[in-house]
Image (cartoon, helix red, strand yellow):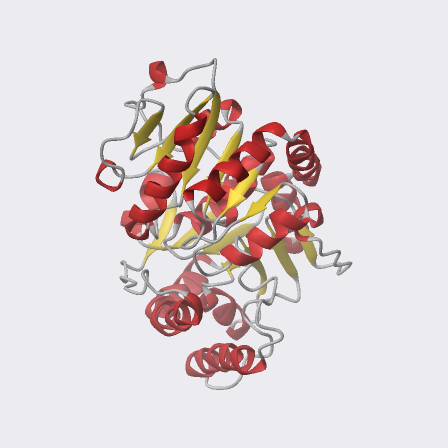
Length: 380
């Protein structure tokens, strides 16, 4: 039996796959502890989980776009979050004495403290923000990010870290596969495991009875961090669905205030049971969040991806290159262009076939169980 210490940011797309891996580890007889906000983690992990509490630190850069979003991600979230939780991570390491620290790529305090104590550590990559190196051809931005990482390391360790805290030399768990990314990295320490999914709280008030099985179902969602940007986007999507109303029904996952007076063929639900709904979905329109996109692809659902920020453009390009959907502009795509894209996904079977090929690769990769098995080997 081994002990694992998870360090993740309080963001659903980061915490959910980590929780799925932790459940797989406990199912194999290992012990797991966490560093993070009790208020955020308890509903996800349950009352029995061991949590070294940190409190929550608000992140106020959610409306930023483009390079401004990258700057605010590092200056307003990743680096301050590292400084905020580092003392608790250090206390947890000294108290819990883990065999392996499992650190999200944006929770670099975990990997830095592991280096301080000479512990083996694994990196979790739930997004493509670091894996794809989107700024490799923009050296000024790439060097700026590397400088922020190095400065955070020096502030915590008193010297430059031996290893970039985003990329463990021992084990890097990537929650996707080459069938989507196109990357074929032969590194022995890289584990491309596909999506790691687990149970989520139910949604008792979802209007299941309103779903029309005689129409094709389109799900529309742009996640939780950017819903305030969605009013005009949702309006264009609703107009795009009008000429398809005879054969298409849509579910828009959004607060009702953002989609006022929806037509009868459009259901608006602020809370949507996405895992239960996906087996009925024929196409999805989304923002390109890695978790959302991969969960849809795991169900063989083709995508229209309208990226907003962070790694969303990377995912959009990957989906289009893999033939599993179309890449559209979040702000500039017209209603008529969305209509054309929706019709293409529903009527051309190649999109569904490509999505199903990716789904097969995800299933074969093993998800949370494969990640747990690789962590188990690292601990041994």
